[in-house]
Image 1 (cartoon, rainbow over the protein chains, first blue to last red):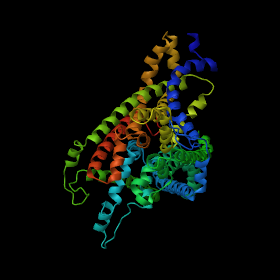
Image 2 (spheres, rainbow over the protein chains, first blue to last red; image 1 turned 180 degrees about the horizontal axis):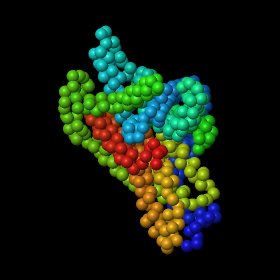
Image 3 (cartoon, rainbow over the protein chains, first blue to last red; image 1 turned 135 degrees about the horizontal axis):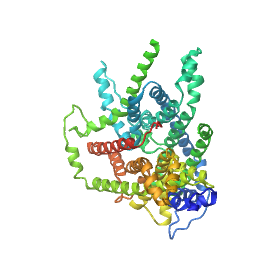
Image 4 (cartoon, each protein chain N blue to C red; image 1 turned 120 degrees about the vertical axis):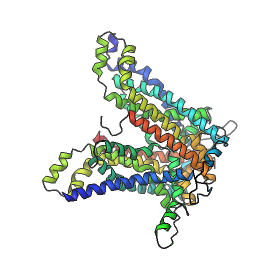
Length: 289
Length: 262
């Protein structure tokens, strides 16, 4: 009985271990060991299959740095991530503000749920649904032609804008969620005080509201930017031939070209980029916590 | 304050526009699954033939069962393991606790493309290979951090004095857990479980790298079909998926408030 009221750090760990081990063992086997294996693998010449000779090499990384194609594609993916993140801020932040400061009570809860709901529904299906809207003779095309007096031809399918639209649609609920959480925490009386002291709406926004909601903005931006840089399904479906990005090249190494060591090296480089971005974002997030 | 009123109305209008942006494509996609034309041509003519033909598609049906089975099994495993871990992280103080909590972040934050290809390499290397078992291993790992985060959030609202009180009244550790702590965190456990189900059922990227032609899940099958060409059959199965996953999340929301208000 006495041991249960654990205060010392060592006995605490002893009681905690049986509860912790199953979950963390699983995470180790399915996440952490694979990530380490990927690093190891990226320095190999061949798949370590029986009967195949393999050795350690830096060639996979040399390929990345010597062929401009890969650097260009990584840059294209980073640019895609940046553009999608910016659009998500532009569209999502005002929505989060309205939700936090204009709507009240039950209607706020209901609408917040409606905005968040698609994010947790199937991403693949949502990307596919844009194909219905954007293709030539699709809904956007037909609707605009029915309304406008002149004939236009909208065929956004298989283009860069189509990829952007699909990704923004996929990720904007994330931005609304993170910004809403920080905006909602800002005391209304603070805003009233600022206004009564003569600050204009724009000044309040610049000096008070945006700085206070910065953690939400940064969290949203990081959580959107990172997966978008690694996206491959969305550009494949909506981008067609224009949809070649860093993620699709990694996909190719594993499912089409079967150059796994190169794929591992490309994945690891992406992981490094991702970690740098998360590290840059973390001071702002820590300040919030 | 006329300006304030006008601004508020603009805000409301803006939210409705955002909702239209979020939902219209999905609604159109669903409508097209009830349209006769195989090329999505208008005018709209009602039919359920695309749903009927789904039943003839054995590949799709077997993939659907795989998806459901894997989602159920990984939900059970991740909910049990995750809840146990959250309880340990809540109840005990020990060195390295912060580190263990930080370890939950990478599986959520690292793009699935990286996690998926890493799993493929590792499982291949140690002899697990690809297939349904590998997919299950992966899904549980992806769901675990979500379960732990959700259950831990619920535990934050728990008063440790209740455990103390039960103990001083003579309850042993097991009784304290099963009669006092578990009933309190149940809404969190259920929400975590529903999250886990959604993570598994909607998971595409990781399943995609770990599946083989015979052993695959529904999203992987749909991706293959989309890349072959668009058919209203894809719309039909997509409509079913989106209805199921949205219903699941609505259910989750009943148990867990996303807004952060208690």
